Image (cartoon, rainbow, N blue to C red; front, side, top):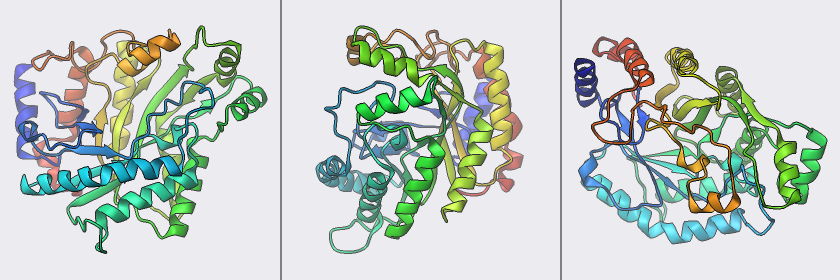
Length: 363
């Protein structure tokens, strides 16, 4: 295993454009770390970083009480607060010699409960024009690569569609799935004359019941029950996304899958390895997919286990991944690879070895 890990690290050092990676710092694979709301340039951890800006903290799994606002007006206020920090960060990244400075505008905007596709299109273009534009007051950053906020390619399958729609409307939400949302977002962006440098999507092999809400009132219990489950075949979902983007006039030539994995509480390690193999083998056949990153390499996803104070207060009891079953046996820097990690390393050596680099398109 040590020899494999050394080889993988050596390849990553020689070939920073490797397609493989993990979401977060990883000793064995190329990686990116997504900086959410952290605008300082972290010199010590190397290059190839990826910033998320314009992020609204809106958890789609929680039926809100109707007071949260996540609309264009709020996005504009976030933008105004971030402009100076983005400029400082870009200047620092240029000084550090970054060849490409990657930004995602928001994260999973199709899962923000109150944000319409039209509002997001306007917000995305506002950030894009500020970062890439050459007019007065714009940054004219030729090194910058602007991604859409990753679209979550997971389909909601309500237990009771009629009841779910009625309840969600009462909360001010909607029941759009990723394909409808993507089509509406890109149609509006096209009308605005907007561009996307690289598409960003999250791809999951999903068979997950919506989180249970306890102690938050009868209405929330009804919504959670009516929503049913997220159940999606990842390859079919990705192919459907590409079809939708092409139909909207945005044929993807660059795609990052900055999260892929499995959403299934009952999945065994063997299930996860089989799912991982199937997805990576598919990614390797799609020329527009430039990078993919396993999520989450250190195991438990704290956002969905109820360990945060906010989720504890809501009493969420169901975890997506309640045990450490990621690529490493702990979050420690020197952690050993798990069985799943060794399977990912095998795929890395199979599809991302030095002799294959002449076939890999540049970012």
